[in-house]
Image 1 (tube, rainbow, N blue to C red):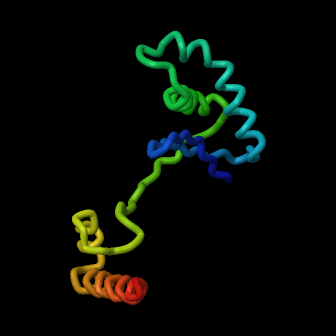
Image 2: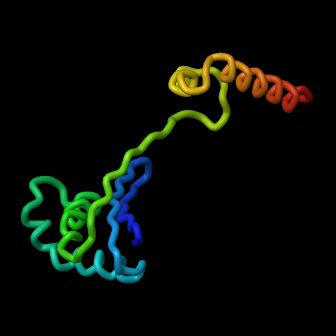
Length: 122
């Protein structure tokens, strides 16, 4: 079994759709997606009630992959948002709820000391 991801992104926006198929290769998936983009292109454009765009075109075609034997994979996403340097700002509250206040404060202190050491000559 192979899992395939059909995705669209533009700057900070990102959508993806995952499918599995027992017999298809990566090349098969790419070709299948491209052929469905053309096959359903006119139908998508005619049914679109707002702006025609790549994002909604990809979403529309994602619903057609089952015709070719692909099965949709239901996913669960779990992630975090925040800076790559912990500094104690509001965005780190979720991180604190995961690692605890003590570990977060330890990380913030280490970064503060590192920043002081790096910029002591300036």
